[in-house]
Length: 317
Length: 317
Image (cartoon, each protein chain N blue to C red):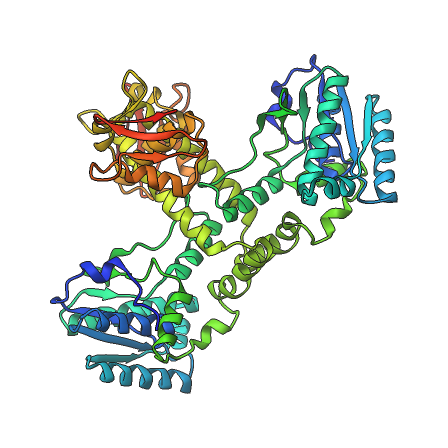
């Protein structure tokens, strides 16, 4: 029998407080549930949503999760939505519709059980896929899931999402389950190369691993950690650089002595703190305003303007 | 006819000085040569090496390059090596043997023509492949080719390598050549999915592009630029943090007030400046020495020791 994976969250999280756990019935979430029980977490509400996409298999998943929860002595909430109907109604993609439906279901479950802390079973393989997908879509550096994240649902309810398994590989979870003789439902959707994530999982990562003889997922998770370290350094550097004046405007003379990359980071930070949605093009335009001969005003999305007056750069709302 | 690609190197580099240009006869290096002539560079020596891997096709490549150089009125050096024989002799991989043979050839050409400035035709697609390959092999962050790089060959001769095409895509170069009716030799080795690089080029990148509908190469080149910006910020932060005492040792109290990522960066910087070859494991061991209760001495590769005494961390050679 393999040892229980040693994951810090299970040592430090509160056993007294109530937790919601999203359980699909796949290996990841079944492992999450067993690890919770194994570590003495008893105040856990199992939440399962049938997306209505898998017909009879979806209903069997729900029965499986219900039995599992009962066998562990945990309460269970099973919901059912029709994602395809939602897609027709809203014009959303299947992934967006499914995600929105899940968020709604979790928010309802949170309200019903007076608990806004939700556990999700994302693991290191999911993280690597997310980093690669965000990278290809144009993220600034490496962007992944947080092990703790606050999410607003429906404009007011805030869910606190925890991902205790983010540091462990899918294979390690499956091996642990196998060593205990614990069964799970194969998530059939993962075997279908339909959505991008599934194709990255089933085609791109295996190909990269085979070509290079390396572990591409491990490389992407490392990249994320290294990028987050760099972000920590940038935050320190911005603090040290102290380019804002007492009125909170950017002091251009203070900015000008910084290396170009830090100037850009300071500008991005200033705009982000003022709620300006950033993209590369806008940042380049703002960057151009640092030159005294450039235009002294730039229209920002939402109607405000970035202005340069008297050696200061500031947002004129 | 497509405009000549606008590449800054061709505006700023010296036309008076002599340049060596590595020309295989493929689209990339043929474009490089034509761009040089087009921009008034006349003091160019064409250097071509037949690796002896392609038999008659290799000899035809050499004839093609010789004719091309003659038609442009440029001197040409053609060399020939037997990479397979070198592999048998040295036990090197084909890629290493080919690279070493090229370096030797370029060094000889440099000596013969009294010119150490070498132009190579690497472009943005090559750069993306390099970044991905380094990432998968465990580079710290994104690591690519420099547009200018000094390389020591044979222990003393220093080649100054310039890559003027690093900012342009392979397709743009090929389109420009086509629009001018300029021919090139298809590099047959690229159509063979043998080496890792070729498989990344012919299988992995096309698959990633197809799955995501995005340009994976562009994403990796962006990542490299963003990582280099972060490195610039880190250098500034290390300078600001000033954690070394007048004797050049790390002042642990000054280090301790920094965020953890910057502490690690300062330590890595200190070790690198003292010529210690770094890997993640060694860095973690050095990092552990910051805790006062940890061992006060660590063996470094090469026989030196990292020691902690009197609130300082230093290398005892």
